[in-house]
Image (cartoon, rainbow, N blue to C red; front, side, top):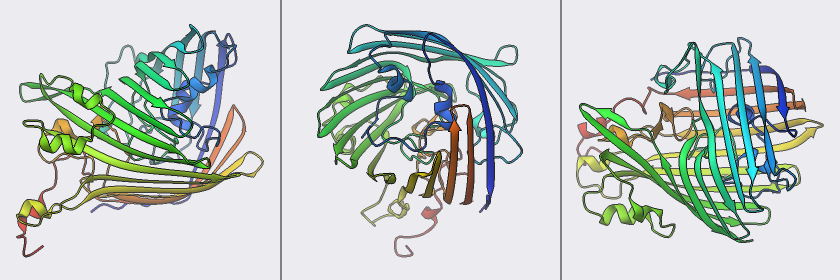
Length: 407
């Protein structure tokens, strides 16, 4: 068992960036690192809209193009949410946006950033190639249709559901963009959607296993927040094709998985509750990976795999100062797969779910001060405890050493 206690962590980041844009625009890269922790209550469930899309929803922004230049230097107080210990980071990001009409938009964004070598987590090495000390690629390349009651998005984009917090359990905000297809129905009371995310393939011996992820979501508008239910399923294998049945938003994956023959997969379910009152807010999330009902054989002794995340906070504690308190816990083996490595909830070396993976608990309180768009400061007091790494490593089956009678 490992323990790591992070106490009184101070992160001071000075952000200076030059924007050469047709209109003022927010850097999309900031969304991955320091996006608005405290979302406005007007957007009840921003499941499939990125911060960039909110900005571009202005009817006057028919054509938008430009170049974002981002630079950051961090001090030696390293947050456990950092991927690299490298102190200096810069990124150049050209982008373009075209609005065909009120419903259809096209967005493209690329980036080039400096190579970083000092990994905090050895398992999370940069996935793609490098050239002359730099990483690069297309960050966003998508077409979106959005009407009063129907929406669809196809292409490459980040995938974030609901409210965007550091501690989200189902989809981490710290990840690469996905090539995806998302569609759904909505009205003033409900939003029902289905999505497909293309995952990286994995080589095992001489086999190349193709990997896919499908999911669906039902979100209920509560007027003072929302209640959402999610189900996702990850499947793959050698020459494994996309399963069209899983695009059905009304199909319960657990039932399909149990009744389909020769269909190996790994599924999760979760629920979210977000409430706000004036400047106060509450966010709760519960995730269930696996649980055993029967107690007939040693395999039935596998512990329940689950996670929970509870956040309370207040915006505008004083002018430009926000506060939140969070408790997060994820059980051992959650997101892992007992047999097939390609069924792990990992995408390009990063956890798909919570940034820390599993086998940990954390409590922390944060004060965030944002006096302007170019200056951001955060003071975080946190206590983090985690056990042995249990996501990238083989699935722990020590429960098989006991009989059912021994428990």
